[in-house]
Amino acid sequence: IRVLEESPYKGAMKKYPPVKYLNYKNRKRILITGGAGFVGSHLVDVLMYQGHEVVVADNFFTGRKRNVEQWLGHPNFELIHHDIVNPLFIEVDEIYHLASPASPPHYMYNPVKTIKTNTMGTINMLGLAKRVMAKVLVASTSEVYGDPTVHPQPETYWGHVNPIGPRACYDEGKRVSETLSYAYAKQEKVNVRVARIFNTYGPKMHMNDGRVVSNFILQALQNKTITVYGNGRQTRSFQYVSDLVDGMILLMESNYTQPINLGNPVEHSIEEFASIIKGLVGGKSEIFKSQAVEDDPQRRKPDITRAKKYLNWEPKVSLKDGLQRTIDYFKMELERSNQDFSE
Ligand code: NAD
Ligand code: UDP
Ligand code: UDP
Image (cartoon, rainbow, N blue to C red; front, top):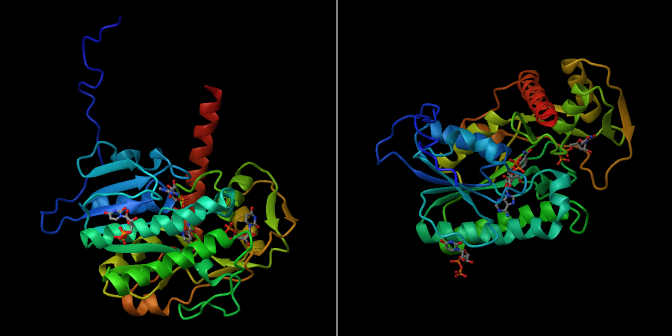
């Protein structure tokens, strides 16, 4: 038996980023479901810097402990390994409900689970909000508009969704999530906020996330073929993650209770987007057009009049700056994974 004479942790005090001190009146206890994921972990950082107590509940399906590792052990931070399909009994003031796979390959991997997460999971969070009288912000999506026939998409548009297609588990799941939010608001007086989030990118996206930004950057960095699905004329509008996080916090703090689009209205075709990324990364990748994917929305661009009017919010980070920061992150991640491999 090896006896440790000295604690291995002795003297090894962890250094945390500085957080603001808030007195008990201003300090909130905030639950973030899906807080170990891409968007959630950025939200965790900002709320921690602001001095709040943050509880993350995550089942680590697509999220990682590494995304929140800088806070592990911090007195204001708690990480719970929990699947929100099951009830959760804790005491909180606010809930940011983000738990759900977001990338098409991830949400299509187990469609039934995606539906359960967005229906049963949302019921549990609304039930929790009802019991403890917490405010709850539900992360919805531009996918509620489906393959839109109105362009750009205002919140008043009801959408054009195929209820039985491959994306339905996510699109309809989020639509039910919204329906549940307003049913709990009306029937149980739960204080709800609904953010319709448009395509978002940035550091801490998973390398194998499968979404277009991470795919194209990785392909360009590795001099591999850049895979455009279909003719590349379909459009998207990409928002940098810090803009989204600012918008979500403003929405939670506001008195506005109707759904609100959070996205960057600068629209590009996917083909243009491939060239932009290739231009920023450099390298020898070729752009290749492969078969289109089923039910791929052909156009997407948020109308953000509401967010401007009620939240005084609009995106600040340009596509070029945001992409550069994301490319730098992926370069680091690639070096790290190469090192892991050689060890
Ligand atoms: P992500 O996959 O990085 O994060 C989702 C997180 O939820 C992960 O940490 C995952 O482990 C967790 N999760 C999934 N199912 C769970 C369950 N049953 N119980 C507990 N945790 C669970 O995705 P993201 O991009 O950070 O998206 C966050 C939220 O924002 C999602 O609700 C997504 O639908 C929404 N959204 C994101 C985008 C985008 O472009 N990133 C666009 C629209 C909407
Ligand atoms: N719930 C939860 N945490 C709570 C309170 C409720 O997870 O703190 C769950 C509860 O298990 C239930 C769901 O939320 O399945 C909906 O709660 P609600 O009170 O609306 O429904 P009821 O309990 O009356 O079925
Ligand atoms: N796309 C692509 N190549 C890829 C990944 C995605 O051409 O390697 C396309 C996809 O068909 C869609 C757009 O890029 O038209 C955005 O896809 P993503 O999965 O990022 O998000 P979506 O908005 O479809 O949920």
